[in-house]
Amino acid sequence: MKITKDLYQGSLNLLTDFYQFTMAYAYWKSGKAEEEAVFNLFFRKNPFQSGFTIAAGLDYVIDYCRNFKFSEQDLQYLAEMRNEQGAPIFEQGFIRYLENMQFSCDIDAVEEGEVVFPNMPMVRVRGPLIQCQLLETPLLNIINFQTLIATKAARIVLAAKGEPVMEFGLRRAQGIDGAIAASRASYIGGCASTSNVMAGKLFGIPVAGTHAHSWIMSFDHELEAFEAYAEAFPDNTILLVDTYDTIGGVRNAITVAKKLKDKGKKLLGIRIDSGDLAYFSNKAREMLDQAGFPEVKIVASNDLDEHIMTSLKLQEASINLWGVGTKLVTAYDQPALGAVYKMSAMKTKDGNWVPKIKLSQQSVKINVPGFHNVKRFYSEDRAIGDMIFLEGTPEKTNEVIIDPVDPTRRKKIDSTSAESEVLLKAIFRNGEKVYERPSLHDIRSRTKARLAKFDKTHKRLINPHIYPVGLEESLYHLRTDLVLKAKSLDSKE
Image 1 (cartoon, rainbow, N blue to C red):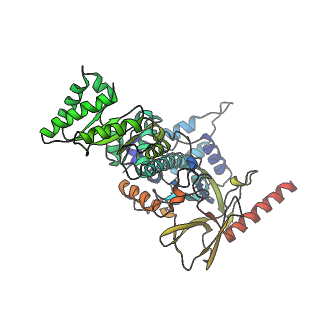
Image 2 (spheres, rainbow, N blue to C red):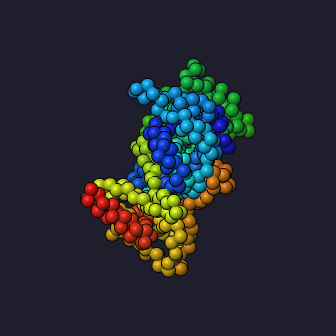
Image 3 (spheres, rainbow, N blue to C red):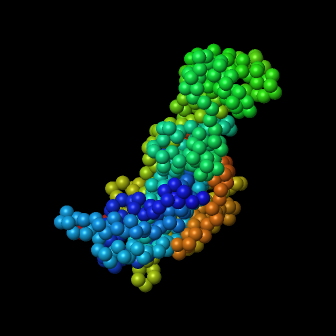
């Protein structure tokens, strides 16, 4: 599945912020371009006030990195850039360096469909400083959006309580790329199908859809429109019943259902796209049952999200399938995830790794230093805590994880009785892909399986219980010492 090749047919190396190139040039100019560094991509807060987040976008990252090569047109554009004095911004030597640069980074990442939390690394990049820097913007662009949408979809699917959710958001999505990526991420989050035919072609997502009000309006009578549609799709008839009068529309749908039955066919369902969905779905259910069609499904759409769906569930609405569009693919109540990409270590000339710390007046913005990973602990197959730790740290009998923002929040874990797994998986080694890419269907299954390992209190849509994620004790002390040292140096200056 070559996403970037299929969609764009060319280099994406200029899809970045200009300051990445100014830094890259300065690294090259100062002789630092080949120094080895480690960067981590992570976020600081779960979106939608959720108790969890679903990782997505890694497959796009893999394609991007495999095609990490500047084209002749890219290099020509950079060479022709001028400053205010009319002189070239970048020397020809730098342009030649970019031309000959071969992607050589190590990348480790959590797999798509994994449940992730604030402050833990989702992607770790190790390699030449200049390459790590040039990867920042595209990785954030890819991971931020798809993770956001996959999380929104997972919340909506949880609200549906086992009933299928269809993603209907193409026409309201943020442009072509936003629509395609949103359809993919929605499927990862648990949606059963999409209305987006191109996404169906590219990713193998089941495609679903019925008809619009314009189909009904093109006929003189609603019943005539229903009959014509049933004639065209006798094995896949779902009728939109609210063009004129919802109750009347249900009556006409029942008439068509009877005619289909006489032909040995079945009306699959009706769709309600406006009005009081709880009232009309219950009334429709009553009418369909009384007419002898209890198997006919009722589909609801109309600006749904997890909160409206929860309300409809509480009202005991008779809805079997959910069509969700605008509020899913646009992440309506939170437009961005806000993941960041921060340096955490650099290798000295003698081969030692030096942890790097970034200070801030806001404690939440102080990064986690060093070459670190994350480990998840389980008790009786239930996730009980995630520990961010430095690679090479010896295991202890009793681990203590400390919240990086609120050190009073601590959790002790008996590692002798708890099972554990390291979440960052090897994706690239020295620029070569070493990861076996799963199918999108397997990724979707992973989301469901991984969410099942968390207590339902962490999956509540409102005021979820906070899942414990923290720094391993020695890493917490290292971070604290580095902060105090950096503040001491700053005060002396």
